[in-house]
Image (cartoon, rainbow, N blue to C red; front, side, top):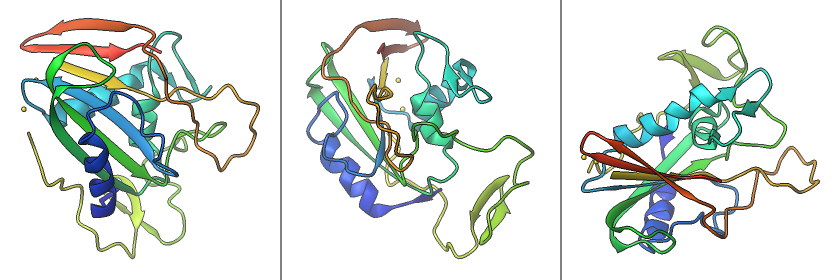
Length: 204
């Protein structure tokens, strides 16, 4: 994946609104949200999203009931090649009861989490790179890409929130449409105490 300044600007504009819900105007962009205090640590956010891997079964494309996997699958989605993130310190984030937190919004293009598809093919790293892609750091990347690696313009360091977009229950069968339907209401918050960090996960 490469850093995209247009996605960064789009994510930043939405982060500025301090809303704990997916951007309904994001079009064909994937999105992950994360909130934490007193500072924002991007590495911790990505590690949290990647931590969902333990709940995801690639073979059956299923997630353990009651757990979240959509952040992880978006982060590792093979055909996603651009990412941009924005962050904002919010005195109040609409949709959650906590105050004084950083809101991180990351947008991805093309979006992952396509209904009926797996995030990547099983097998050794780079064993099935498509034509026009080369292996770099065990990832298939565009041979034409001159983009810098992920280099966000901010790095802020630890209580945390994350949310994921659930699969749609619609009968839509198009493989070209990302899963849709951000939660309109909070169905439950679960608090986890970590050393110097409070992690709050939105349970869907």
